[in-house]
Amino acid sequence: MSIYQQLLERERANEPIKVGVIGAGQMGFGMIAQISTIPGMSVTGISDINLEAAKRAEDFYLSHSARKESIVVSNDFREVIHSPNVEVIVDATGVPEVGANISLEALTAKKHLVLLNVEVDITIGSIMHQQFKNAGLVYTGSAGDEPAATLELYEFAKTMGMEVLVAGKGKNNKLRVTANPDTAREEAKKNKMAAHMLAAFQDGTKTMAEMNLLSNAIGFVPDVVGMHGIAGDLDSVLKDLDLKEKGGVLSQYGVVEYVDGLAPGVFVIVKGQNEGVAHELNYLLKKGERDHHILYRPYHLASLETPITIAKAVLQHDSSIHPLGAPISDTVTVAKRDIKAGETLDGIGGYSVRGVLETHQEMKRNGHIPIGLISGKVVAKRDIRQGQFLTTDDVELDHSTTVWKLRALQDTLFPTV
Image (tube, rainbow, N blue to C red):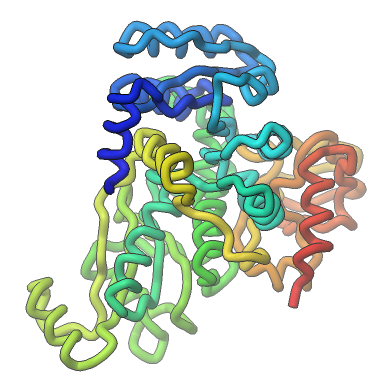
């Protein structure tokens, strides 16, 4: 039975899935608005540190939903997570430290967890997925976010027996490695976004994190530190994302990538596994005789697709995307600007640092710092140059944060091979 049919059954039985949402910003509000139209699903809890934002989301939901639920509204996410009228939690905060605390709280409350928080997933996803699984709960990234949308294409191709060579996404914003909340503020206001969130998109951190999450879910790696990030269209990408000896930029297959020019879509590059399949691909895709083909989804609907994952978690006890096990890649910390000894660093989407993707083994070998650990009070021990990859010789991390403690435990339980 399809998820939609299962939702209709819940609607007819007047037993909707009861959803608690943490974070009522752009993503959280959009998802709450979408749930107001979905059968068999209700929002019964909303939390945001800005209580007015939470109440605004509640008012919008109640004015558009046919079902008038009693909704827990609070600036303390624990009240929503522990509400007996909530059965599944959505983390739409995008903040690693907040996400770490939400994860632990949801686990304690025995609630499934859906993440619109890639930033925490790439930092402690391996251990949290294992802990939720051990507790009989679902821990999952969200449908509609690029990692899960790309994973759908990847599994579509693999289910047909095809060889997948490259998996990736289009980048929505031009890369501006020094972007910060000030430079992003005007555009963010037009898009009804938080300035630091847009800055994290523009400086590349979000793209790196998204492909990090995909890497951890399928085992593919970045071909080079930071990926190649070529520009192109559906035809040129096929030529460029090929091996160097074939005129492309890659040193290997089995890689994650991003492309300037394919946004807002996601893609996989595939090869027919034998001559018969290769012939059929050429015939069906009408692109002439090609060794490789690109399967492309020209959109991802972000938080509007999150209810699919919510339903999948509750009704089918399944996820949209989760880590395979130990981390495959990490998004590590790079200075956006010169930083003086004694300065306190801000985190993702701020003024100090951005994220760059590399393999987990490279991260461990070089002593680089996952960007999700730039949380709490992080202080520079010495002068740091713009563009420098940070290590623990450069900064003092905040060991009191929940995200640092969980990452340390993850490193113990999932040692690098």
